[in-house]
Length: 355
Image 1 (cartoon, rainbow, N blue to C red):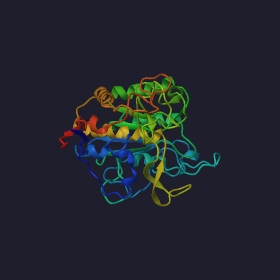
Image 2 (cartoon, one colour):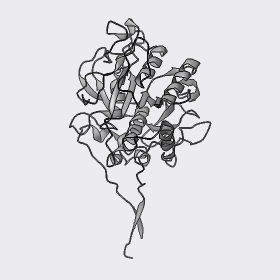
Image 3 (cartoon, rainbow, N blue to C red):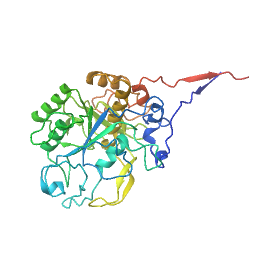
Image 4 (cartoon, rainbow, N blue to C red):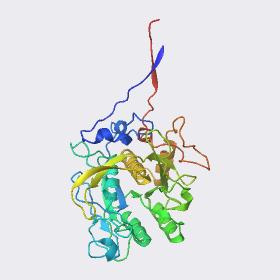
């Protein structure tokens, strides 16, 4: 007898850039297996993922009926780029920074596209979650953003009241923060994350791109968040990814294809681009949790986190990620979406051969 790997059933969307999106597929060491998970669910419109980022452009690879009316929490006129402070338009006006000689990144489009770009529509890229609703919350503008705006945006996104801002009528079940910096988790920030957790929402954050212990990186160093590190296609820690005991798990974060724009300052032509960072890994986890909520809508926040951590796939043999090591930890394992959804592992099958 010889062992053969059973070939799983997968869904192959017709988006032209999908073949480049190795992170979605189950045939690489670190792929999250979304193409197999899609045989179980494509997500549900009732589940809302809030994306706190630079906002979004009018990219044609968004499903208009899935993009909820978000909000712009950038409070300073110079940073906002739209001539005012907070307003009801979360459009990305560009985050270019003359002082840093940096062009606009269209980071919000890239992150949002990873979560839920319009999929199987013969256009651009595929998202992890085909059907979830997306709540865009603009908290970053030109050059950077204020922590107070991020915290206000996080509270508003999950349905908590923010003075001077209309209540959010579509509260997010999961919010994604692919942002941060090297600073401590102050008491005010921790209080907000505690409040959000008690309110019943999940906060997923990027571990940071400093090649340092994540205990130094906000908001990964806060409690009541799920911090996500980045690995490459082979399942090795990405060279930039923060690490350590604050990292809960890792997901693909190198050469990730998603939505972009050609504009160097303001938006111009919608595009696709490859980018790398823990910012790319975090939204995969957010979207995967939204898939789980589609099939288990009554699951609690605590149960979501437990099921996520119990479903992780071990790092492949020879990986630079050493699970459980205080010196170099990429978290407890790799994101495995089929396992998260309770799908059985693909086991080798025996075949008889003549001798």
